[in-house]
Every structure is written in C-alpha cells, then in structure tokens.
Amino acid sequence: MKYRHLFFDLDHTLWDFEANAKECFQELYIDKQLQSRGIDDFDAFFSAYSIHNERLWGEYTKGLILQAELRWRRMWLALMDFGVEDEPLSKIMSVEFLERLPYKKNLFPHTIEILEYLKNKDYVLHLITNGFQEIQDQKLQSAALQGYFQEVVTSEAAQSLKPNRAIFDYALQQSKAHPDESIMIGDNQEADIQGATNAGLDTVFVNHLQVVPQVQSTFVVHHLQELEGIF
Image (cartoon, rainbow, N blue to C red; front, top):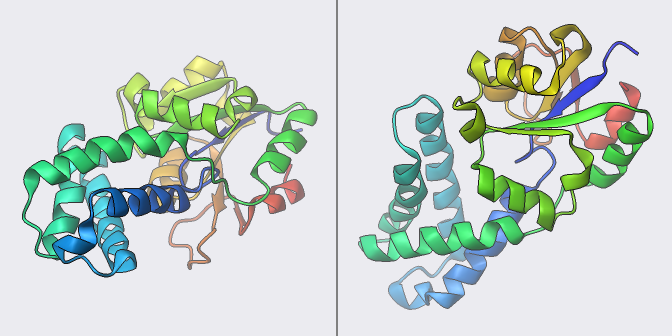
C-alpha cells in the first residue's frame, strides 16, 4: 500500500455545499418574504448569491478580505442585484444562513460507502478544509461523518488557508504523516490540487462538475465510487 493517510476536502467534495446552501436559501427566501420585496425568481437569486460567494471566497483565500466581510457581503451583493438595498437585512440573513447551514445533511452519492470502504481497508482518513471550525464540526455531526476522520484540520486551526503550503504542512504534522505516504482528495483545482502538489503530496481531483482539468493531478475521478479503483 503506497498511501496510508488520505486527506479529504469537505465542502463540494463529500458534503454537497450547493444542495445544502440552496435548502437554506429557500427557507430564508420564504421566511423573509423576499418575493414581496421584488425578488420573484428564487433560482436567479440563489445563482447571484453563488457567483458572489465564489468570488469573495477567492478574495478571502488570498487574504484580501476578512471572514466577517465575506459572510455578509455575499448576501448583500445578491440582494443588491435585485434592487433590495437593505444592509441590515443582509446581515440578519447572513447570521441565520450560517446558523442553519451546518445542520443540513446532503452528501454526494456514495460518500458513506466510500468512507466505509476505505476505513475497512485500514486507510487513515483526515480532513483539510478552509471552513470555519465550529461550522465544519457541526456539518460532520449532522451528516454523521465525524467518526471517519482522525484529524479535522481547518484553516482556523492551522491559521492558514488552502492553497497555502502551511495548512498542508500543519495537517501532516498533526496527523504524524509523511508526504510520500499521503494523498489529497478534493474538488478545487487551485486550493486542493495545486496546493497539495506544492506541499509534496499526490492528489486526486474529484471532478464532480465534469470540467476540463487545468491543473495536473495524480488521479482524476468523476464520482466518489471511482476511488475504489485507486485505493
């Protein structure tokens, strides 16, 4: 067995962030009566949020904005796209969104099956995530994932964000793993694949979205069950 330590990303790799976020947004859309504020198309509103969220997360990972700004600005910008200039509402929605989100349970297909398969083959499983500690811990508990991972390394604990090498070095140190026996499994080509490669790890690009790879990885899979062909 070449690999012993398998490091997984959480959001967008195992835990279906888009499906869970959309459930939360649907609840907030109804609770805050946003249709009466002129936001008639829920799907368009959620799409606007997703676009702003992706861009702002990119700025956050580069250290250009702070966590607190990321949390409310993505909501505020989505509301502004529909002519709702209400900063207090955006901050209330941001708080409630983050309160609800970690309790959602949608996982990508075969998540539990593949984790059981890997655990039964005596691989040591860990997480490396850019999420916030308290929120990620609750996600794991809600989705019944917490028992699978020996180390859960968040950017908050490591004081570093993927793709920075420091978070991978911290994860290796915490798990007492050597790069030669470790591999990173994730969906984000820059944060997970390029970041782990720069830290000396092999990688598996989980290409859920069927995009054309722009970064070289050791392996590519299109759904989690394909990991059985590697491990």
